[in-house]
Length: 237
Image 1 (cartoon, rainbow, N blue to C red):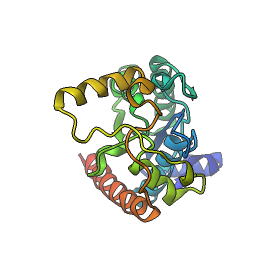
Image 2 (tube, rainbow, N blue to C red; image 1 turned 30 degrees about the vertical axis):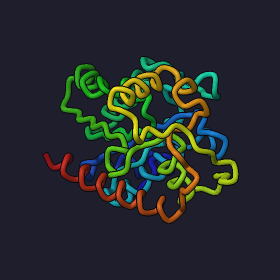
Image 3 (cartoon, one colour; image 1 turned 45 degrees about the horizontal axis):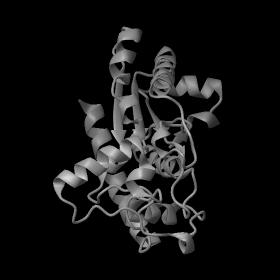
């Protein structure tokens, strides 16, 4: 794994010239994650996953984009940018990378609210560059079997595995959808995309109280292994 920010210009240009290079861009967010997790949780998790994936795939790792689309968490704390702003930032970065000779780019998403911003990035990059630039979009939670949550069991376990910032004594049960009818579950999910506080009451989707470091390590291994397989297959096609 090579972090692009650590390279000097001559060595970086040499790497790009001598080998077909793939760049990995992690995208997170700054937003509330209950009383027990830091507001950097999404960025922390996606940075760690990107780190591990880049080591196993020899991708050049870009600095994490720490700001995302998190307006739905208001009035809980969030530092958000609009969907169009995030899209524009990513398009500009991809075009700049292409001008530097990099034509294979992976964007790894770590926040659910960013998804709409990412959908049209590949086509826009291709249209602007007018070259064969490939931009792949992956959200890390699609590479694990467990149901994704927000500050619940999964995110809290992963954070326990990668960080010392977790305050388990403050962890409280949040919204648990198990047992809900399909109709009610659909309604609550839609509500959460507009107002997380109205859906969850306390900003937590799931129950973090039984989260463990060991579980977090297992989940991380699963995500990284599946992502590495996906990246290798995708880049061969």
